Length: 442
Image (cartoon, rainbow, N blue to C red; front, side, top):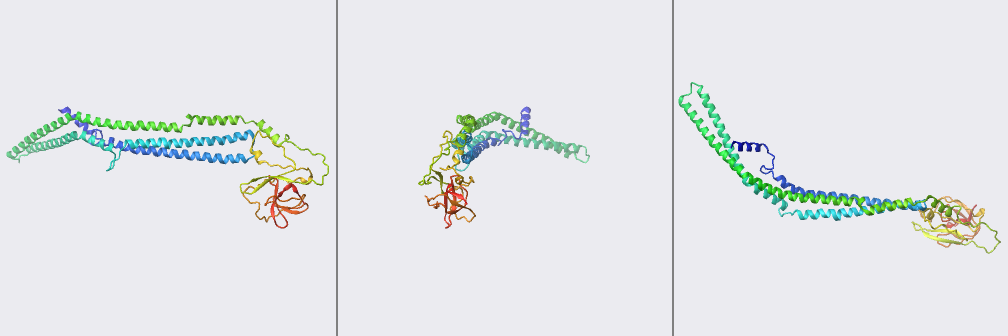
């Protein structure tokens, strides 16, 4: 019996044990924590999806901007194509990151949301059905043992109080024996008190030991019932942990683009385009298009022809501000450039050729002004210009063009643009465009 008492005494020292009354609530709380953790996982996935979307948008904007810059810049040929391929890589990777975002939201996020809905059932009065069932199951398993424990604690308290009374009575009796003033009758009463306390202490001890014995008998059943409920909670938690592991693997698969064949193809294509760039091919194209390899109508003897007129043809296009831009050519056709390599250089370079080569026909070099920029060429211009004289008659073919006769003087307000046109003002104040090689400086 004393061994059982010692065992209980050692159990009393462990106040945080699962087996203590009410300590099962940590296991019950884990169910509520699981629902909250599902919300945390969904928030985590949602935030990562926003990052993927933002990155994809930045790649697209970067690619669009630099495509335009390279397209309008002087780079040409196969190296230009290799450069543009870098922007194409960004666009393809942007699409892949959009797919990552969609997979995270449409697959992973929805998967957690649906699992949470199926696994946790809210009650009308609050809380979850699973939490309530676990709490009630533990209470039911613990109730008989908790009742016996309460009886044991009462018996223990009674026994300890009886021991205390016995000790006090014994002390009083011992003190009375040393005092001569205590009558024999009084000493007898003290002795009887000690005997009674000993009897009460013995009875309390027997009751205490009996309560402990009864508690010990129901402990195995108590442990079995508690372990059964705990196993049920463990099974529920195992499902959550296994599901979370599965979801995290899905997230990893969606994030890991190195496992995506399309991602690998993007960079193999990019490498192929860059390595195919040829400096010699581009140099040859430039020589044939803008260098010694170009066709040339060398000067030949021409008989005087009084009926010769200087007609012009125009190739029109709209600038970004809606201004009509024209390319001036006179009389003869330009030599066709090599069409095998389309480049920004070719698209942005404009050149003019005259049917006659003379000192009078040479115009000022390009200043780089472009009428399709941000300003309107027909706004009133109060700035100073250069006086020029018309070499030939010209009849304006559009509303934005000037008309004049050979010998007329006018004011040149801007240098010749890439299309071969100048902005000018007649003496009557009319503003407009005219072909640059139809005038000469005064």
